[in-house]
Image 1 (tube, rainbow, N blue to C red):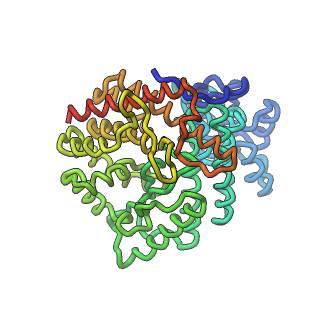
Image 2: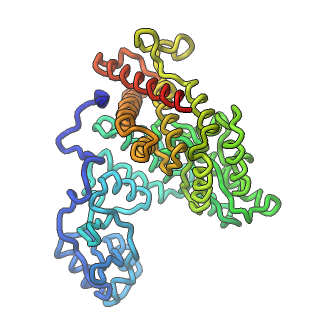
Image 3: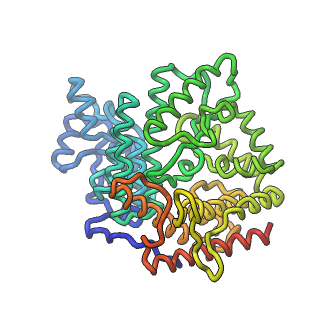
Length: 482
């Protein structure tokens, strides 16, 4: 097993976002009232309990949630009659999480939904409430408040100002010892929030969309693996009711607005133009089905290059069912398809870990980044490619690389031991990457992926060699298999 990269130890107060279950964060029994309780009585119950929220229960079933913010915005500001039932101001059927979920799960849900209270369920019953304060590692909860600001932003300029906080946020998370897996999820959640707000601003400017669509992230955003150094990969999937003559101008302007906004926020335009504003990647579902049919059935070099981007997709906004239906069709086509998988493996083998003779780490020889190691393309990408191949071979729905490796180990497309070791290698190399970027941000440098070996201890160098050797071993296994 490969150990995590060296990092400053977290303080005793630092919350392990992944290792802490929500059940462990519950501080009191659930505060609940029937839906017919008056607003005044519900507020009094909250005051007496010193709680910032109250759940509305019908027997054992949670039917609503009222928070301090609801009382302020929906009652006091509106001059509402306090004798009215509290159900009239409640959020119906609020989002919940199981007690076994992690603090990171709660953090991401709060950031996505712009909420600060999450009811926790345990075995079909409501166990209690977790708030943003309960998840309160300062570095982690900053993502919740950053997402809240993003949701309320009135302009692209406001979003640009807010996006400047992402790099310091990643630095704080890395310094606090949060895992690379957790940092990737948190940073990507903020990217999702920026994307959604830009979409909302585009619709406010252009009007309601004429047909259903899904704004779909590709690449690292789809995999929930973004860092502070990311370009944008995305596409638009349009309902088959789309007609170019009638609807083309709307979605062309829509995509340009969102892509330009992301670029302004620091997610630079994709060098390969794999973005929704490119006509090729803004198409109705019939065309997307044809794209994937061609890529799988005729895996020529361009198709294999595109597979590294478009076989990692996740719906960020709109009608997610459009993507889900396509994903099911694609996985049915790739499962056990040895011709396609063989070509994918051959393409993946073009990126080998940088190990030379006698296991010596080889560095970039010349150019701007001479004598450094590319942690992204030489370190992380080969594992991403291996996990993608295993997922497509088994028809597995997971998109995140670590989750794909777990699923592959459970499904048998990887041995459980190899799946575990590759996850450890991925976490180790990704952790080196985010820690390297955190040091650069702290020194007011632009973050990149190029590491000098003298930044590493001998201990970390040894584990880096172990990680690269493991990846080579797995590449050889797939080469032999396909």
